Amino acid sequence: MKRILLVVLVLVFISIVPLFSLSATDLSFAYGKWAVVGDRLYQNDLKAGMARVDIPAPQAGIMEYKFNVRYEAGGTDDMHAGFGIHLFVDKPAPGKAWGNGNSYLLWLNYDDNAEGVTKGLSAQIYKSTGNSKMELLADIDLNQYTYLLTKDVMNMIIPVKMVVNGFNGDVKIYDPTDSSYVYKFNLGNTAPLTGKFISLRTNSMGISFGM
Image 1 (cartoon, rainbow, N blue to C red):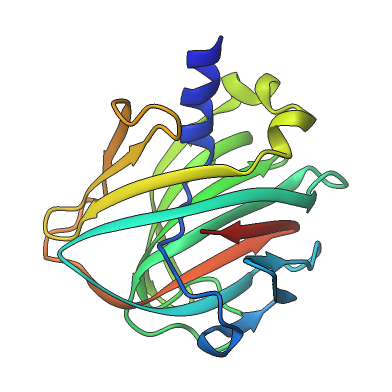
Image 2: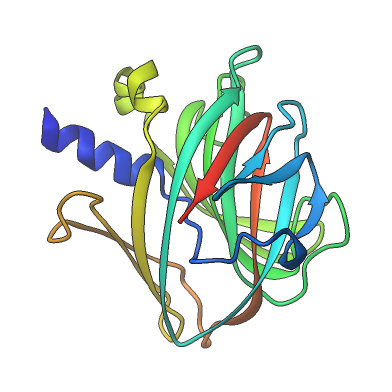
């Protein structure tokens, strides 16, 4: 059971945040109610559908990302919520937007009434090619693990380490308690990836991020 739970945590928290400065002066709050409190970055608007903050983060070659994440509130009224991160963003969208320049969005989604994608819990990978254009590259059904998402698990601060090879798109996410276990996937890029920003975003829920 312990092994199953650890695998679930790696899959569920597939959206990752690179090591970033939590100085508010470094952040651009595009949409939502973001705030730095102590050593954590919070998004507190439980109704905002496309909340996003943009963070300067030059990216090229092989990148190592570290973060921790914690569920705070929301997503229970209509059973529709999500959060994720855009990697390798060239130019963030101004304000509220569906896409986010040229980037890759790693997204955790829960939607009981989803159309065209998995209903319930899923991990998704999108390729953004404009502020209103995103292509769904992968939709991973995680419904077999929803019974493990208890209140105790949701309240945990989950540490994550990820290595992304910008040359070939290989992604490795390490087990937060056993670095010998790695979850792997590929972004499918045909040219080396570079970016000037990462962007955190949420949908109808409160999330906090830390280092």
